[in-house]
Length: 180
Image (tube, rainbow, N blue to C red; front, side):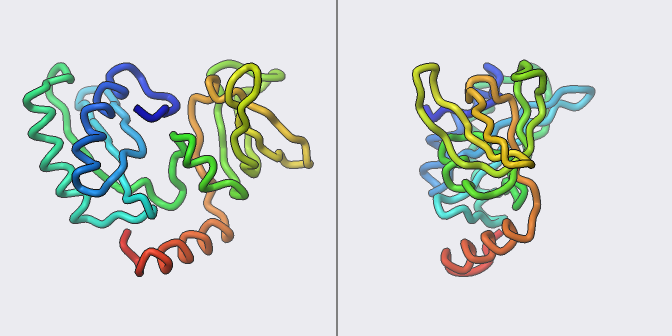
């Protein structure tokens, strides 16, 4: 199973159930998030390998996954299932997301402070394997380079910029048109 950042044990379990279902539909699971409160919501973000997804893809995954979740029953109590696109200012949860969006601006949060801070904003340079494990390299405002251990990253999300919008248009055109 592919590594995903910030996945709780229940989210990881659901991702493992959802991945083969998504694969049969030509989709990939980007993120699984379970939120609580009075009404629990299971949010699953999905896309095709080319980064596109449409409403029919989301509906098909929702139908297929609902049946699996009813049988496996990994969630206690009632919940609502939401299947969606990751969107243009998407979360970055997989190693390949950081590679695909190198050169774009992201906000990153770490589970514990690094050099006295937990929130980072800068241009993604990519992932590197080192003696301490995989690190996310970013160029911060001011030109400083940060090397954040990926195991400490608790969340990452692209920042909506003109460059990201243009890259998304180019990617959609290469994939055969607007599909989101």
